[in-house]
Amino acid sequence: MLFDSSIRKELARSFGATLIVLVTVVMTMTLIRTLGMASRGSFNPSDVMLVMGYTLLSFLPNIMTMGLFVAIVMTLSRLYTDSEMVIWFSSGMGLFNLLRPLLRFAWPILLAIATLAMFVLPWSNQQVENMRAQYESRGDLERVQPGQFQESAGGTRVFFVEKSLLNEYSARNVFVATTENGKETVTSARSGYTELIGNDRFLVLENGQRLESTQGKGEVKIGEFERYKLRVAQDPLGGKIDVPLGNISTLALIRNPTSPAYLGEISMRLGFVLAALNLSVLALAATRVNPRVGRSGNLMFSLLLFQVYLNLLTLGQTWIASGKFGFLAYNVLLHGGMLAAGLLWLAKRQYNWGWRLRLPQRKAATP
Image (tube, rainbow, N blue to C red):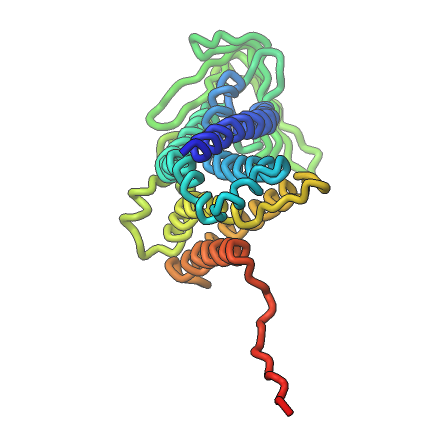
């Protein structure tokens, strides 16, 4: 049908333009945040673009859902403004007949959202977390840049080197200030290098002196040494790390269906797909433009509705994880309720139903 193909082409153009704008905005915000985290030492500055790419992948389900919703609202608003919907209604077609071309256009996008939410999102989050952990698990001396003061990972030491030989993990004119157990220590040496003993990494200083003082007391101990070892990393590969729920694969979540936290995460990921479908129906039902007013009102309403729906998804994840709601009950209530509301709204406009309940009136008695 000519109308179906034309509306799908217009939806594709609108969706592409909206997606480009949203991706550009999110990329700018992500770049600013990633640069700030890199400046604080959370990421390697050379990996900023890679981290930004992984972060953008984790935002794509939200971006594509919002892009689809806005594209449908803007396209329908344009049809109402140019009176093309009047021609459509005059030909005997209604709003329910528009569901077919809309869903034929939306199903590849819904499939992409499902793939991103179920598989790509946890993978991208895991990659970002691995890069963060790998950068933060470096030795304290490896963090130091020549000519700059650098705080250790635990915040108890401050390092300074005048010249560093990075390939040999050694440095010249090393300064270390330590605050531990109520004692302040200042150690300086002409040279130093790192040495791995078992699972611990030590900083070996040569030809230097050490000043030790106790907080609250005026006593200062001064000593000189030819060789001094300082542990800077303890068992860097040991210990268990708590994995965030967003980094766990969907298959691993499904294997443990008894955990409320896992069910809440599954509800959140599944909610992206169901929300995109329901928002498409709600966009068709809610969009109605007065040619004398303009399309800005529909756009503002669509953005508000999308934000409310997204907040309900996040709130539902918290409620399911805390045990306040069951997984099936909340999803049926939220997504089923939204779909029912959209179809009822669509039927109301299709058949011109009134919101008031019309009661039968008694006929006047004949004399």
